[in-house]
Length: 430
Image (cartoon, rainbow, N blue to C red; front, top):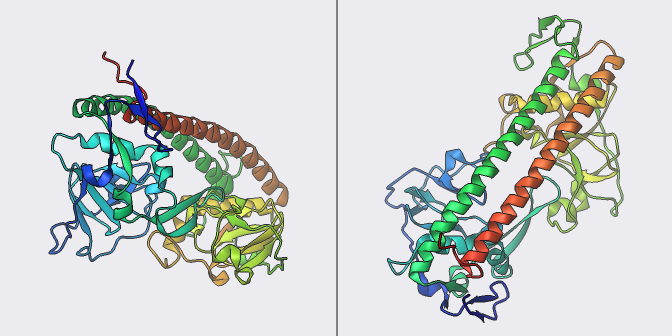
């Protein structure tokens, strides 16, 4: 049983008596090497979930990188790559690639060759270390995460402040043992995470296919089809007609009170209460808002491509970039169909994006020109929507359960890393 000593550092607590406590700047050095003259156009990205990856493999895309990469920095295999704007959110990882990264990234390496870079990377992966950085940065920004619940805290942490932080330093032989053990242990956890994520992906695909069939074929899979004549609509049920959003929907202009609940139209196809801690123009300035009532259709003018179309379950206020609408048809059918178009990638084809990976439907004239198939009667619409409501709810419940498992595994992984890189647990000899 190893003896422990108190570091008097809140996030760290006790470490083994034989370990040292040193400032980051004394054990790691920042390497600043600009891509000028340009040595590579291979752009790397960094996310908390995926680590350091080629930009093209980034989930969800993101803002398009600059074409001129001469101001970018070079990253090498074996570098700890860290986003100075997103360290608190876990944007740090060990690079396996040679490429260039945004100038806001830091590249770190051990000063001593026999130090294990993996050990230091694991320290920076721990949640408690990341939380300890809060307050060190400049220019705090609370950014809406897209689901209406979580916020991403972004602040640029200067290297001089980061380098002045103390971290535990295990003896060099133990660094390798700890890193080897965590590589194996985290590898096992990552396999479980990957398997669960694949199950979620299957469920998401199943949900989309159920909606797709419902809004184009109805509930009778064997019903005769006809060519819609609309390139993005494809075949539809033979007895259905074709209309336009502008013929069946009316854009509303509702008033609101300053004290009304602030809402968001999320990329998950839900209208949600906006986090009360969020700040920014959309919440703080009421001249950017409009009223919305329970049962209104919400169509996000910028995130349409991502499925930000929903039927509101709340009364409140929402940004004016969202089209708030009523309809003469079953409003659920309108929402399901417009979400279906998002699944098919239609909005990017029929709009001009104002930035990478987006579409621009801020103009109601563009929204109202979208074609929509209509079942023969409101009764048929209701049967289709009742069925979709039931099935989608069951799928969403299953997905939520899977996501809870993912959260638990992520927390377990972080906790395991913390216990070993701080010496609170010893690597088993076996």
